[in-house]
Length: 513
Image (cartoon, rainbow, N blue to C red; front, side, top):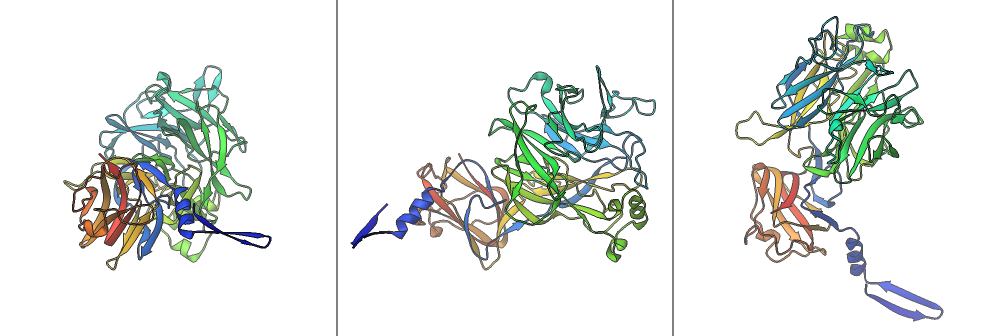
C-alpha cells in the first residue's frame, strides 16, 4: 500500500492514497465461488445495483389438489408433510388427525405415508402395519406403540428425511425428529431411525436428544445432513423471552448430541411470529440455506374477519380457543449463507389467496418440507420446482394438499425495466470455462455481461461492447462474446461481473466446463 508522509514539529502525518485503500479493502472481500450457482436470495454476491435494477421476490403459481386427507384415520388436521425424492420414487409422510367443528380431536394421532413416481400424482399404499378401528388396511406408517419397556405416544409432529451422510449406518438411512412431550411444558424431541423408511425405531430409547431447555418443538422441526460442512443441522421451534414464536438452530456429528448454536438472526428488525421454518440447503446451490416459514398472526375479531369464508366454522373453532378462529397463516421466504443470519423477505411468498372455502384460516399455506423438481406440464419446457401447501384445515372431513410451481432458481430475481438497470458483483474467483445464466427477457429486452478486473476495468475481449445482447427465457443459456464463450484464460483470476439489463429478470448464474 502506497503512502506519503510529511513531518511537522512533533507530528507525523500519513496520507494514504485512496485508490490503494479501496483496492486493499476489495481484496478482503474476494469470493471464491468456483462453480457454485449464485442466486440473488440475499446480497452475498451483490456489490451494487444501478439505475432501476431491483431485487424482486417471485411467487409460486397455483396448481391442482394432489391429496385429500379424508380417510377415517386422516382428517381435517392432517398436515406437517415431509416430502423428498428417493431414487426413482418420491416419498411423503404426514400427520393423520381430525379436529371436530368445535376444535376437539376425534381420534388419536397417527403418521401416514404416500408415494409417487413423478412427484405430482400420489398414492396411499396399504402398509398393513397398524390397526385402526379394527383393521390394518391403511397407510399408517407410525403410531403410538411399545418399544420393549418404552411406550411411545405420538403427540404433535414428526419430520422425516433421508440421511445423505456417507457414513450413515444401514439401519439409519432414514431419520426423523419426533415430538415426545408428555405434557406442557415438558417439551422434548426423540431421534428415530429406519432402514427402509417404513419401519421405525428409537435411537436413544425414551431419552430425548433435545429437551425443553433448548426449545418447545410443537411445530415441524427439521433436520438434514449438511454435505458441505460434514455435520447434521437442525432447526426447531422455541418461544423467545417475549413469547414470540421463533426458530433456533443447532448442529450435531451423530444426530444424537446437539450443540445449540444460535437463535436465528435477521437482516431486519420486524417482529414476526414464525410458526414453522421449512429450511433446507437449496439442492442446486447447497451453500445457500432457504426456508419457507409459516407466518402466524392473530387478527382478532373484526368486521373484515367476519367477512372471510366459512364464518360458521370459524365460530365453531373459536369455542375451544378464540385464536383458532381468528389466527391467520401464510408463508414467507428467507435465505442465508451461514445458516444462522437470514435475509427475510417480509412480503408474503404464498398468500392465503382468493377467498374460497378452505382458505384464510389457521394452518393454511404451511409449505411442506421440502420441495421437489418435477416435470413441467408445458410440453418442451424445462423442469420446475413443485411446492406443496395445506388448505381446508379444521373444515369438513379432511384437509387438502395443493401443489404450486416456480421456475428453477425462481425465488428472487434482479429485475430491470425497459429503461435499463445493471448489477455489479463483488470480486470473485471462479473455475470452469463458460458462464451460464438463468434469465427471462421480453422480445424487446436483453441481458449483456461485462467481465472486469478488480478495479472495474473491462477485460480485453469481455467488455460490454464485445457482448451481443442475450434474449429469451431459459434456465440455462451460455453467454457469448464476439470472440466466443471460452473463459479459460481468466479462470482463477479475480474478476467482477457486470450484468446490464433491459426488460429482463436474472435469476442465477454459474460457471461450468
